[in-house]
Length: 129
Figure 1 (tube, rainbow, N blue to C red):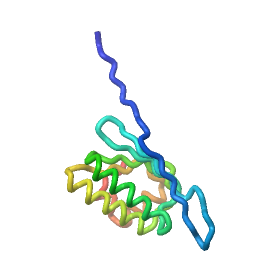
Figure 2 (figure 1 turned 90 degrees about the horizontal axis):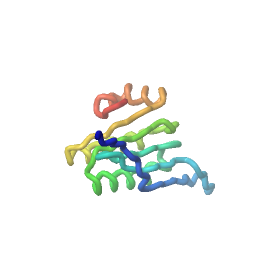
Figure 3 (figure 1 turned 60 degrees about the vertical axis):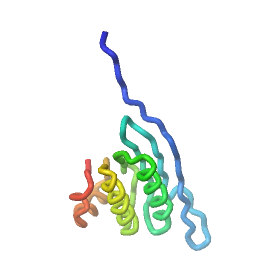
């Protein structure tokens, strides 16, 4: 009798960042869902990562890397925009992950974001799928 093993994704945490631009709350700027799949931590990043939302993302990414010490897989399917502050946070996250002998995978990037990674050479540092 063969055992049927399936991988199950468990959502551990959901986070929504609200940007405050000129006194206005702008919901839906950035959403982050964190889960676990086998021995990897998964994240689904949606919306925009910019100067207004990047600090919240940094806190969550660093916390996840430090507390789990596992490979990090970031699904960028719904990521519409990322600026230099967001790129810096991803680089910092990669440094933390590498200090534990782990990797950061960036999956399903839109063409405009993939082009940014290519122009900056970051596609050579991260594992981009």
